Image (cartoon, rainbow, N blue to C red; front, side, top):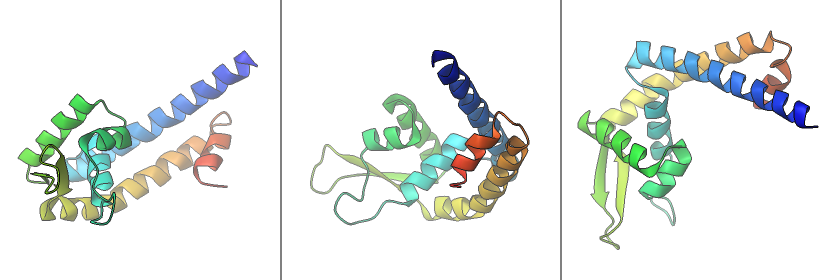
Length: 142
């Protein structure tokens, strides 16, 4: 059982690495965005003004799978580029929230098709490898 688990983990790590490398190349070349930057913009763009709709920095860090300090640095970089804006929570002055700016939303909308096409291409390539094909099917929801 341990060997199968290790092989499965290696296959999953290989698939993730292939996908992330393809996304990184395509997003950087076409939009000047890293995978992490794209993911952060995407996560923050899905916030809403209803109950629990805005994410605190800790929740954002969990969503983008980074430490809180790395997430704060990433937010600062995107804020410096005019793609995000931070503000204090009106009901809790200790809470800081982040919204995607209009320029960030525009960039994200231009980058979404690039991300989707790169993901499709990476999955198509990976599906040709017997050790990765079953995982590709899972990712595709089949």
